[in-house]
Image 1: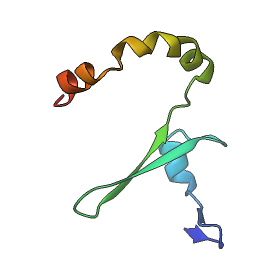
Image 2 (image 1 turned 60 degrees about the horizontal axis):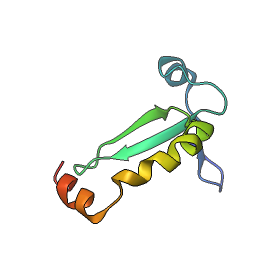
Image 3 (image 1 turned 180 degrees about the vertical axis):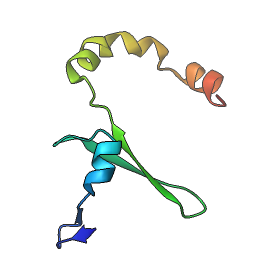
Amino acid sequence: MFSGSKGQITVPVEVRRAMHLEFGDTLAWDIQADGKISVRRVEPVDIDYLSAISGTLSEWNSAKDDEAYRDL
């Protein structure tokens, strides 16, 4: 599955179909403490939406908030 010096891999067609992967999709690799690795498709982020709401998020960004929500 591993190919080339760029660290790229080839995902078998059966896996691409099962994961509903399309060209350009982003994958995330999750490494567990026991050494097991899983892969998942990552949904794209809507940058325009995040930019639009970024100004409203500052009210939740204080030392008191960090302390209150630290253990969640």
